[in-house]
Length: 264
Length: 264
DNA sequence: TGTACATCAGTGAACGCGCGTTCACTGATGTAC
DNA sequence: TGTACATCAGTGAACGCGCGTTCACTGATGTAC
Image (cartoon, rainbow over all chains, first blue to last red; front, top):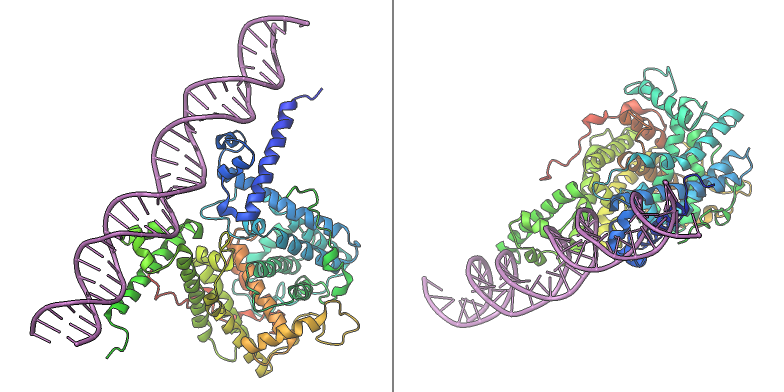
């Protein structure tokens, strides 16, 4: 009855998963640069060459970890956002922001692998781009929903979409295409202003997370939780959400993170 | 007459510089993980053990490169900002932002070394913290100046500094100390709101730069120059500068970058 | 000005290590008739 | 149900490499008297 998935394929999938699980454990412990096929094989009680039945190279294993990482943070964000009241747009944004940070703090090396530079000369292949946008898709949806509901004010600043008095050096024209693509892929039916502002908020969120994770806040911010809450609230304004209306959302600790299914 | 700097010390300093110059070249080409003492020694026509007369370990050499990196981006930011009219606060902010981005794009691996994760298990030692805040100091000064001149409006959003109606879960209290430290170190005499908002803008700036550099904008933003201009303008609002008043500053290409003194 | 001594930059060999990847092989699992 | 064959996961040895770091040494440069 199983048409072309004999037991072999199931076993193969299982072992592939074991390999990535152990590799992820090594990644968490030593970082991407310290990830060694031979060490992974050792932990599996296998000979190192056996791994080549599953991954053609070290880079391919790294790519699998990158995809898993994007999926993991994407899933964490999805779960946290799904738990919010649909019409609480600020709450949804804060849930997304908190979930991303919480995941990053729990998986710093995985975070560094996907949102930092991935080591010398590593070029992310095409199969990463789907999973890469999973978290962003959740964010885009909430922006679209807020837009549709009329909950958005004008995004905090940014030059007027068209026809301000001669502001235009590089100008909105160049960005109109990019905004259109954002609408097509990830946040349907939002005006240019909102789309571009939202993207800035998104990048800014990861700036906050990276600063915290990579030590830029050492000796600067002591209460990083409180600061993050406040900053995330501030960023809401960049896409026209009423900023600083924080307290609505789930408090940070409660955020469902959705990594329970993970082995590590 | 030279009391304790005989010719020996001068030569020593010179060779130390040669080592870091070549190491920086290797860093630029291969990234931090690919930096090898032996390879550096080879380029110097030295035997690898000779480097240990100058650096006690590979990590110490890396630390020197980190310090140099912070100084280089700091210097670039200083030079760009110094070229602005003192009372053009938005222009000063944009100059700072552009200089940081320009430097990062020109030195991606150095940027990754200092603002990304520095490889497995590397812990930045104390001597990096001075240089680390050099660029931030320029930014802080302009915020302070803008505040002193009365040019700042209320920072875009963020909960009111005190006494909004019961907003307070983690609340401003926890952050008051951090804001005070910011005043002491880097932006004297600005209110909590402004200090915290400015810090958010600062982190956000590096979020934008990292996203661009590490490929998160691939297939998303095509005109990265135009987008950065716009986003930087938007961020100005986070510390109360009139946002979107862009065109004032120097256009991106003109920004003095201040790396001319570099060998590489 | 000249000699005796200390400093210390650079050498060369070695230690001990781990790595990614290839390749011919064995032997178990599954398939076709 | 049973035999002949193909697939393919895992083995074990090897190739070729580069790395960080230590250590006893040589010989030039500088210092003290």
